[in-house]
Length: 247
Image 1: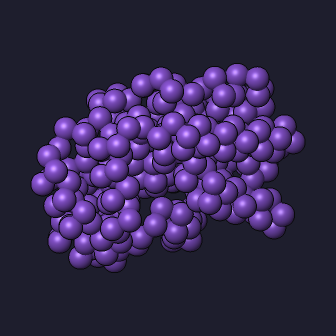
Image 2: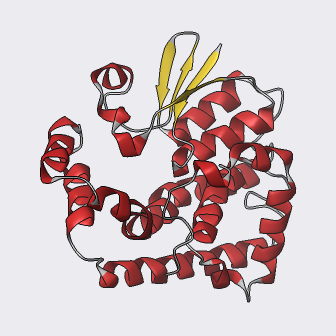
């Protein structure tokens, strides 16, 4: 039995849903609404003390962190293989999984906060925001959300993030100009890790960043054609209310 605690909008939740879908694994959905702070409730913190989504529960055992969850699924359910057999290509795939953790996800967060989360948080009272900080296991993250709710958009941070994202896409273009997939010849956990980054950029109306990158455009088209992608990506009713706000 696989149970996934996730938010449809969550970048990291998409990663795990993609892996589950590619492997054809049935799973039970437990929606954790981040904007309602359901990830800070005691019952969820008992399951995941970090207070983040997703959490995968397999036969009663919780597994944390999206990258580690996907590695776990690859080990436990190897029938549909999502890592290259070739050692060099496997190393390349692992690099891109790490690149998503280290570069792609951090780069997208400032724009997500500024354009998608701030409008919702701004409607909350000071008391509600104070309660959020008190309940959140990561005080720095909670205070960042409060700042996003009350302070004007930090255009400097958003522009810096945009520059980082642009450089990341250049690097992806270079890789995909020499290989069909990020790992090499086969679709892998590397492509699964990067796919939510593209989805979020489209949500932010930033698809123009790859208008002159033919290899990346081809990879995006092929990724979107996969049935698992259509199954894992949220539909419009499951997205942030402020989605598609132009930067």
